[in-house]
Image (cartoon, rainbow, N blue to C red; front, side, top):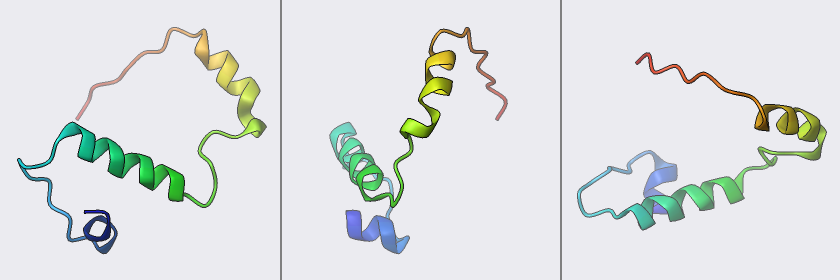
Length: 59
């Protein structure tokens, strides 16, 4: 499954479970060359945590 994902031949099918998708996502995040959440932005994360965020659902 992971190999197909990186080759661009991966197809989301009915045989996949939420656990399969979660495992693929976790592996993708682990393989990133630079972490998404770094100490560099820790103050910004703390500020956003207490904010009332507006979610935009325009698709």
